[in-house]
Amino acid sequence: MAPTQGSSLPSALANGPILNPLNILLISLLVFVIYLRLRSVPRPELTPPPPPILFKTFTPPKLIKYNGENGTPVYLAIRGRIFDVSPGRNFYGPGGPYENFAGRDATRGLAKGSFDEEMLTKDLEGPLDTLEGLDKDDYEGLEGWEETFGGKYLVVGRLVPCGSPEVAEAEKKGALA
Image (cartoon, rainbow, N blue to C red; front, top):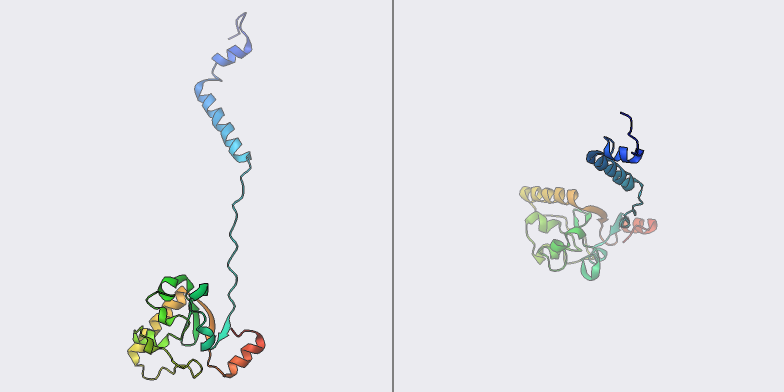
């Protein structure tokens, strides 16, 4: 069909099949998608990772400082392994139900299922608890606690008695807490 005299090409296009409402919508959508792809998007700022935790050797007097008071991390020991339980500060930190274990060797208390103060070693300068007097059920309960802590918290060190050869060795390596 040839354009009639007096009609211009743009008006023919406007009334023709090219600029129908559906095509206008599709062209608008295409322009919008191109705009979204080409616009600059600010990159999100990443928070810095937490500082690495170094494996250290602790003695009971050094460990007791990590009881969660004054913003310190919360550590506790089970069978010589020291766990960072700071993510569970509500339980193990000041005011929590297990606060007696913070900064201490919690082995006997967890094995016996008792959170009383008398389950803790009184003499921090003396030998570590030998776990004498625990029966088979106590050891099974303790293994359950160790599995729970091992799957939930990081091991940050080991507990050794004051004056042991491990203390001197750790001191030489700079790994003594």
